[in-house]
Amino acid sequence: MNLALWLARAGRESPDAPAVGFGTATLLTYGALAERAARLAGALRGPLQVPVGGRVAVIAKNVPEYLEILYGIWLAGAVAVPVNAKLHGSEFGYILEHSGATVAFASKDLDAALAPFAPDSLRHVLPIGGAAYQQLLRAEPLAVHPSTDDDLAWLFYTSGTTGRPKGALLSHGNLAAMSYAYASEVDPIAPGDVLYHGAPMSHGSGLYIMAHVMRRAINVVPESGAFEPDEMLALAAHWGRTSLFAAPTMVKRLVASGVAFDPARLRSIVYGGGPMYVEDTIAALDVFGDRLVQIYGQGETPMTITTLGREDIANRADPRWREKLGSVGRPFAMIDVAVADGDGTPLPAGEVGEVICRGPTVMSGYWNDPAATAKALKDGWLHTGDVGVLDEAGYLTLKDRSKDLIISGGTNIYPREVEEVLLTHPQVQEVSVIGRPDPEWGEVVVAYVVGTAPPEPLDALCLSRIARFKRPKHYVYVEALPKNNYGKVVKTELRDRDAKSLTEPQGGASA
Image 1: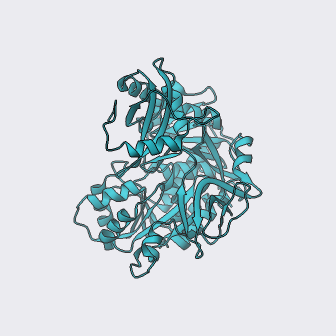
Image 2: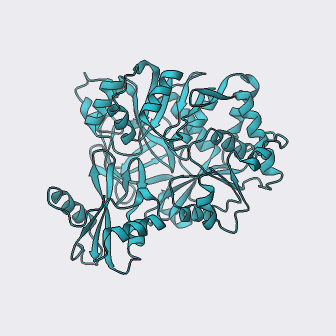
Image 3: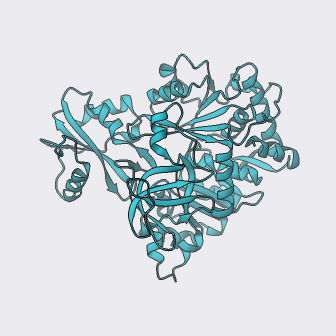
């Protein structure tokens, strides 16, 4: 089944129902959204010459057009490649080349950043909302392509342990199963309910679009195109029945905003994408009441491994309440979750091991990367790289993450990618990057450096090569890095050393 069928049906059956909001205004009805998507599909298959299965990139901040572009791509039988708008131009270029995208829709402020790095395979860069974009909307509308559940719908780029982004292959069936799981176990949706897009639509927030279109809800994009607590609460007060996906740092900002607000205007706050401290969850519960839901997932099984429901989060009378708040909940009904040893053998409850899962939301592999696919998918199980423990009641508690992965503000940062950049400086002999716990961001990036390069040129080097959010927040200069007998840096020892030294002066700190 093609995901675009849900929009086509909504356009026929509920043409006057509001579909897209921008700020406080209703921008498009379902009839108008369905027609615009069908015309974009006609343009993609016609003048833009995108074949069935061809890749189309979306490099954009949160804009109302995001919905019609996604559905236009699927209507045409093509594959969407949403890209994190916060990446560096060179990172845009890599994803475009690796995916083989021939067309890219870009925010007006991002097309210039992309231009110097555009690969030869990219034939068209279309600024969203510009004259060329408006011309596409005059194309003859296209009927929904008869895609199957197994056909590729979304190429989800998520960084790998080598620092190179990998494209998780998400089919129409994967995303449909994810949507069913959301609507039945996370956040039941009624027609006219609202999904607020404060988090990036290229990732978590965008993945929930489909469930809300399926149920004829309203997708609202803030005028800022980003997450601003005051704006979010004001729009929730205006629209009512509002839900949003939020990284833990966003939830903390909402709590700290101090804005007078009626929690009854909120439907739910679905949080995930990083660790949420128990005390922060309780603080949010005190402000917003029983409207919090936690999800745990990865791009490889989008948003769908386990969930901690609002009943568990709000049940202060439960003697295990705080313990459950420290977990990531229980498996979704359609997902089989286990904790396994090094050989992939499931372990009994109470034993720590790698989290593995299988089910209809799990990707079929990585785009053009058989080695990474073979490592991640074994005997039908997705090996997440996360370390955790299941209790007797099925609650999963994470003990660590994929080796050295840093999650800052809900965004994955892989140390090697940052290290590779820093090592290009002639005055850096060695470097090791770790995450330091941070009460606001979850973690911040810290670089331990053997060398004499000052922080300022290292900052400039990072800003020229990688996204700003990956830049180290602190540099610590050392004579040598801790290594094992094989010469490999022991990051666990480095993290322990860093934790012990937090109350001591840090040399070369960079804000």
